[in-house]
Image (tube, rainbow, N blue to C red; front, side, top):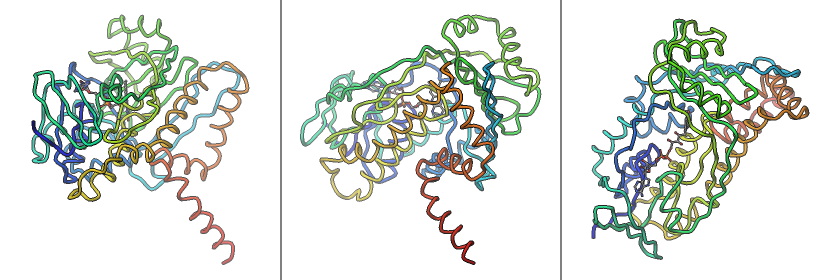
Amino acid sequence: MKTFEIAVIGGGLAGMIAAVALGRGGRNVALIAPPAPRQDRRTTALMDQSIRFLDRLTLWDKLKPAAAPLATMRIIDGTNRLLRAPTTTFRSAEVGLEAFGYNFPNKALMEVLEAAVSAEGNITRFTAFAAAIEVSADIVAITLADGETLAAEFAIGADGRKSMLRETVGIDTRNWSYPQTAMVLNFAHSLPHENISTEFHTENGPFTQVPLPGNRSSLVWVQNPSDAQARSEMSLAALSNVVEERMQSLLGKVTVEEGVQIWPLSGMMAHRSGKGRVALIGEAAHVFPPIGAQGLNLSLRDVMALSDILCGRPELPVPADAGNQFDRKRRADIMTRTASVDVLNRSLLSDFLPVQVMRAAGLHILAALPPLRNLVMREGIEPGGGLRDIPAAIRDRLRRKKA
Ligand SMILES: Cc1cc2nc3c(=O)[nH]c(=O)nc-3n(C[C@H](O)[C@H](O)[C@H](O)COP(=O)(O)OP(=O)(O)OC[C@H]3O[C@@H](n4cnc5c(N)ncnc54)[C@H](O)[C@@H]3O)c2cc1C
């Protein structure tokens, strides 16, 4: 039986990035990654902190040509409610950045990762599914669907929302669903997007356009399930007209591309992210609706935390309590992000007037107060980043007053 320091189970984006990060961090990694079952036509927006991490892994230069910068984010209240929020615009230049983040096709990132995995001497790839897993105090033993067996000092479950590793170690989950479906598509447009992402808030959920390179954008349109079903059955020409009308023709003529997908909205959170010789990352640990570009950004912070725990002293064996350390390190971030996406989504759906007042007032305040907008932008890019800057900002202000 072959033995490794770390086994990563699952070759979605989270698992592939984890394998590259830990292999580069000096660990001997088994990557159990069957080929993806279907063509992924989604795009992903990664924020500045995640882009810097990809850069440290030397992946960013290769991905950048396929990515469009998100320099401006604009929120437009597209509801017909009595209390409507003002249009709020966030510009990355206000926080001294060229872009808040970048948007690219998942396929482009997967190609860069496939090449990085093949070139990494510390990674051995297995393409069969894990069929059975046994976790003991000293080792994790894995039997693959083709009968091969391997063992590792530590196992990482990147095996998606139905994670076998999570079930094997008996970590329970909390699951919930929303009365909404996300329609996901890419489209070409006749006017340039100028690196602006526009989010229309509607009574059924956000309608979010995100730039791609050239005169193209991606769209995540959250709507009620029967509307989404009906619209997904329209001809591309008819759907293009509907999208253009919803975009208020801001980008001129719209041409929706082949490959429209619909995703019922749901959420899941594992009760813990790890214990003993096991850690769960990505959708094995947390799933939320595709609102506010959070999922993979959170998964990358999982991988950063694992790299700190597992690669600080790669010459030493993996600690037997690394999974517990990981759980402690990740808990607050996962809970905060899950709750904020949930609140944002439910505040749009709610017809309850006080909730509408709070949402509209919140955006009014953000539109009017640059320092607060600045703080929110920094928090969006790097959780903790904005709050960390507060003491320094207060000190600066006091110093200026004294002078
Ligand atoms: C419509 C949509 C839009 C999104 N947009 C954004 C965005 O803009 N920004 C952002 O940050 N996030 C976004 N996300 C979230 C993001 O796509 C996911 O968080 C990300 O893809 C990570 O997924 P994963 O690798 O954890 O899971 P998955 O992609 O589900 O991968 C799990 C992998 O594990 C494999 N597997 C399962 N069981 C086994 C087994 N027994 N043995 C071996 N392998 C196994 C599967 O084959 C699969 O390849 C979006 C999500 C959706 C649905």
